[in-house]
Image (cartoon, rainbow, N blue to C red; front, side, top):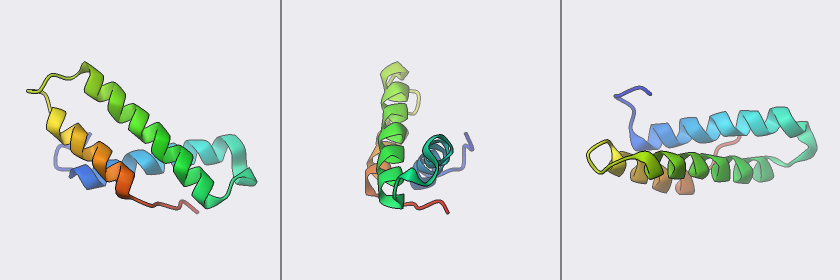
Length: 78
């Protein structure tokens, strides 16, 4: 993780990465909206996993903010 990355940037990175995986798995069978929705769910699961292993002193607030940003963003990978 880039330590200078904002929560919004990290959220976008996680969703974009997840969307590429979804695209690779199902190709063009899904619409961009469907791919994005699945990718956002995967990214939120990732945040929840990180949050489950973190203490408050180890970046917990950052990952809470990342999760909130994931819920706000809309990314379409073409």
